[in-house]
Image 1 (cartoon, rainbow, N blue to C red):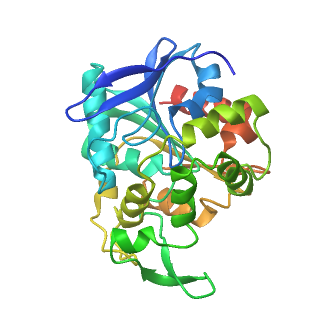
Image 2 (image 1 turned 120 degrees about the vertical axis):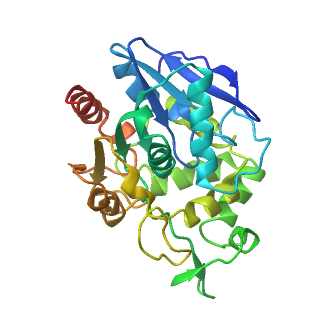
Length: 296
């Protein structure tokens, strides 16, 4: 991994840390849950020769501040608008990964004139990421959503264990979790993996993010949590979505919810790839990103 240094910039109520590497047209890179802008370094290493790669740590992640408790994904989209304003960037290409996808889709729905295109890497659905109540055997009760953030915080499978690892700085446990659910095909080099996990352990908003993610719904349909608001119709830019066959975090049906909801969306199928094409197939990913942007 090449050397990097984060910059800092003040927003209205937060201070964002971010990577700003390369020259050319700007690409804003929006990370997902349990990560930071640093996780984009393999892709930045390729794109920096042709583009200005800007990868912020979202509110409550990485080295950014967490002054205001997160209650909705809209707030992260609003942060992005302030972030671009602070950098005097009117329009940019966007790349998003995992939970960064609904953040980016919300931003594009609110500010269609500021988004040239969206390339989503294993992007979470515009209908949210459901976290259902569990029975005594810790099995999901499909269709039964938690009714409050406090109740969701006690989820014994998807939320509480992760929160406990972050609070106790259980690096070994978090590394094992990533190996089990993210790195299902390849693993990054040991030195890189240590840097990524160090970034992951900085997160302070896991419960808040999980609550916001489970409650976002830009569709025209009901989910277990709420009725959609239809804002997916406001997406006007070209969009592309990767769909990996061994992603057990964002399954294919969730990617297809986005593809089917956005007119003209492009689907890119990845074989023998897990939730992190950034690790599993970086050469293919970088080529697809550059080709997609070039076609716009």
